[in-house]
Each structure stands twice: as C-alpha cells, then as structure tokens.
Image (cartoon, rainbow, N blue to C red; front, side, top):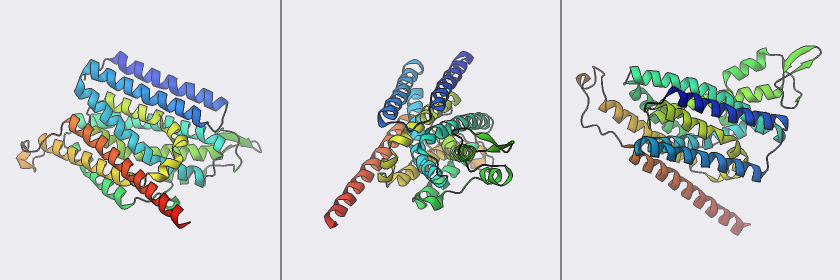
Amino acid sequence: MDIPLWLWATTIVVTVGFLLFDVLIVGRRPHEPSTKEVTRDLIGYVGAAIVFGIAVWVLAGGRYGGEFFAGWLTEYSLSIDNLFIFIIIMTKLQVPRQYQQTALLIGIVIALVMRGIFIGVGAAAINQFSWVFYLFGLFLIYTAFKLAKDDDHDDSQYDEPRIVRFARDHLKASTEWNGVKLFSREGGARVATPMFIVVLSLGMTDLLFALDSIPAIYGLTKEPYLVLTANVFALMGLRQLYFLIGDLLKRLVYLSYGLAVLLAFIGAKLILHAMHENELPFVNGGEHISWAPDIPIWLSLVAIVGILGVTTVLSLAKDARDRRQESSTS
C-alpha cells in the first residue's frame, strides 16, 4: 500500500482528537460508567472499525481489507485476555470504581504511544531483514505454549513491572487519593498519588502485551498503516470492554487455549513466510524454500474467526453446564 502523508497525518490527528475528547470528558467528571454508556460507546468504536475495514476493502482491494479485519480481530481478542490482568491490577491497587475509567484511559494513551514506536521499529526491521520473521514466529509459538500452560488468571500471576517497583521505592508517594490527579502536594513537597502508580502499572503492562501482539499482527500484514489502525481500533474500545464484560470474562474459560492456538497458527504462518522468502545462508544455502506455502490472508481470516468462535461456544457451553450442575446439587 502506498499511503500518502496526508492520510497518515489525518489518521493521527483524528485519533488524538478522539483521545483528547475522552480525556477532557472523563477527566472532568470521573465516574463509573453505566452499562448503557459503555454499550453505546463500544458499538460506536466497533462500528467505526467495521466501516474503516470496508473502506479499505473497497478502496485498496480485498487483500488489504482482509488483512485489516484479521489484524483487528486478533488485536481485539488479545486485548480481551489482557483485561484479566487489568482487573487484577485494579483489585490489588484498590482503585475506587469512579477512578478506574480515567486510569484505563490514561494507560491506553501511554500504550498507543509506545505501540506506535514498536510498530515503527518492527516495520524498519522487516524492511531490512526478512529473517526477522523467523524470530517473530518462534517467539509467538513459545508465547502460545506458555499461554496454554498458564491458563489460570489469578493475583499470583501478575508480576509487577520493574519500573513500577522502582517508582514505589524511589519516588515520594502518598497513600491518599487526590481525585484522578497523578501528583499532589503534602507538607509543601510534590508527591506521587496512588493514581500515578496505577497508570504506570497499566501502561507498562500493556507495553509488555505489545511484545506478543505486534509480532502477531505483522504475521497477518506487513503494512504499518494497517498495523497502526488495527491497534488503534482495538485499544479505543478496551476501556468499554473492561466495564461491560467483566463478569463474562470469567465465563470464557477456554479463552487462553483459543488464543494459544491463534498465536501458534500465526507463528507457523510467519515461519512459513520466512522460509518462502529465505535469505539466511545456513538455511537451504540462502535460497528461497519453494515448497513452503505462503498462507493467504483469506485463510488466515477464516482461521481466526473459526478459532475465536469455537473457543467462545465451548467456553459458554461449559459454563452453562457447570451452572446447571451447581443448581442441581444446591
């Protein structure tokens, strides 16, 4: 795709505009959003993503439209799994419900900035070194194995990032909440509030998640513009998902296994692509491996929808069965 500079600039300006609007509205009136509010916003963000994908399909062709939808669905599904960790963070740090929306919003802004940097670095690496797909693929397969092995989400699974521990140990911090402010003054000294620790935890944790999601989406498209927009649409609806499906998350008991299969599939796709484009001198004499198939995007899209659909159906079926057994024994 040949993306003109004006389209890059327009996309960034519109994204920043939406974020500023959210920050101003939510920051001015911190509150726990109602189900109606988050449902309306979530439908708006999902609808915007679908319209954007259709526009890409019509204007740039089915291949790029399919790549956007595959990338967006993958990022969204990974984001849903990330919500488990966000819930743990909010619980462990005892964040009041009326402040959680603001904390998530600021954390998402930080994550978008850092993911933008990751996307740029990834694009540069891919353009210069085709063998990086081998590394991405192996990393995703390792991540898939680890995700399938550690499928339980509990407090013990959350390991506080080092930068957060450093901030706790070296910054003057207050234990008193001062609304949604990150800093306040105590005894004439400037101190960090608990909100600062919460935002830092969310931002750094989501940055760690990017180590999985950015290689995964580059396995579906090599277009930085589609990688960026898929991440933007996935993260923009993350705050609404947090409040809307908190209880549903507990019912998706097979989500980690489904995501493990999804990451393993994309990892295998990346390795096959690397073999197809091979330039490493110690692999097949530096020649392309002709028998290695390049999985088409339509097949990737079908696989993603199928894996997520089967995971959801099996999870809800098991949850319904467990509920019936509980009610029959009580």
